Length: 349
Ligand code: SF4
Ligand code: SF4
Image: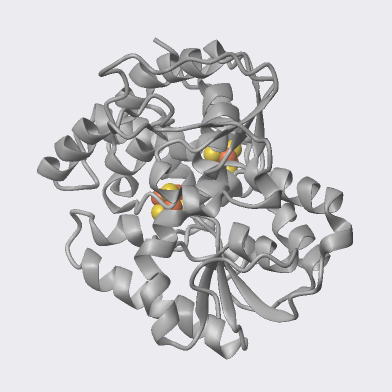
């Protein structure tokens, strides 16, 4: 079984305990943060394991790449502390079973786009941005052969990821891709951050979706007409696993003439869509999620955003309606990029 690379001595020497002192959901002073992270590292119970809303952000906050959130998720499972009601955990685990049938393997010998579990979002993969790019995806029989499984970090079910992920990687590798462009940055986080943390070998080169979009837009630069829209970006929890790729959000906006409005909840200080929080077991979770979503959208409104740009389809599903009810148009990043090259996505007026 693959073991997490977590260096407890690093926490002893760490001056900041930023993993926990920056947490937006639990309050800590430096001393308490140090005590609690060491408790977790040595397998003891901590209130953090019960209060964590699984926002992934401490993975980004730790300046040493020591993987505090993977540690939290692992310990939640080891100590039987489920963030989500157990019947929902079982239902989710059954939903994403990957190997119920044989996938249709075709050798690609070039770049491929992996849609992961988002096969019902092919409407986002249209036009010149994706011309000639082969796609692998969960098929119509709902076989999750390409679903990275990292979602189970929200369910305190790290063992499911460890069990299934190597087989998913093997299936992708059978297509012989030179590069695997990950539509969802949770997949990108799985093949880079998570696999590195657990020493799982990845025999292909993962590419972040926004890096692909940016490079493709550069190729199509002559077609770009500035969109001249004031935009707010909804940063998903999964992007905390690849903070080095977050810069492509700003680069894309600059390239297509979108004005990224100045907000409180941006970059490291971003608020997640609260989709994971609303389903949690902790008392008052639903109310807490609603308050967070309202604060987030108020912040977009105050900053004068006309459009809210989404990375993750699940975030769009969770708060897209609320955003729209507040007079801000929700749009996925691919559709915004298509607008910039003169393609009008369905539903855009
Ligand atoms: S996980 Fe990172 S930030 Fe947290 S105490 Fe350890 S080294 Fe410091
Ligand atoms: S995952 Fe989020 S809520 Fe949980 S400890 Fe880390 S920063 Fe705090």
